[in-house]
Image (cartoon, rainbow, N blue to C red; front, side):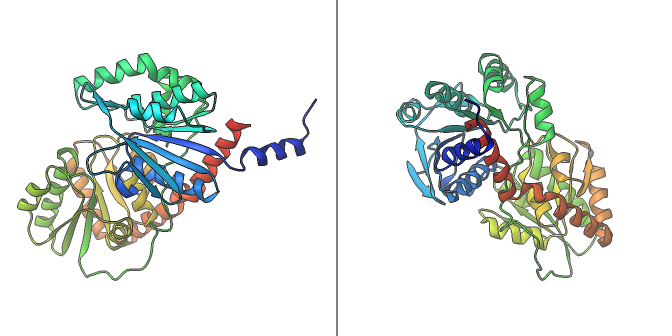
Length: 378
């Protein structure tokens, strides 16, 4: 019997009335405060829970974390794990626990053995849809990682990309990288960012200009930014520099800094948003980014950035700043100095970011994702 539109509409209502959703992720920090993947999963799970769906997030239990946590209307379950060749992790207790439960849909976040392979196996065992957000990062820092990435791709990655019910890269750059592995239909769904936290608002600024760096205190990021900022300090007065983040170089950078530099760590999102609003420019050197949440957050706060023309940075920046080639740090310094002098141009770039970054608003992203859920379930 042929279904009419009203019958299909009724089926949609029944199917989406209350879903049991398993989200598998490579990490979920305590309280959901740290890490790009964590923040993406938290915002997705939060919005689904608001719609009345039962959401459980499964992740590894790293030191200092609890076995279970209830947050924003959903549940996080964490399990012990074993490392595979010191790089990737697997948890037999987690898989044995999950396979005893009933779900309507499984959504894996991150391209690796867990959660991608486990989520895919779970979906096929239970005959439910598998949604896959790869957070794909083709850049590998050493030979061992390159070999493991290749082996995973050939033994499992290609299969999962080919047969998942929906694969959702976060931008066109990631989509193009995935197309090199498997030719199929991909639907771009940006990482969600909470527009209730990251938005532009009026703050009292000092007479000094401020350059902001946010990210890991490591060699290929913070150390480069610090050297550029030191050069600017020597060339121009009344510029302050704020570095936010943690990492192995934090103490060393502090020892090389003077009174014009401020170092902060463990900030809440609200505190971070305040610094985006107080700063005049964001400096963000990076070797590769599969999304760059920091630049997206800056855009949503109307803060122009100077970064690197690599990976997804141009997609994420949305024309709201300047880009240089990796290694051309003299050019990055000149771009920062030029924008410091040109308030009109900074405001213009900030307005571009505010307008275009609406695609990152968590409500818009989750509405798009929800439609994909509906499509694969009907």
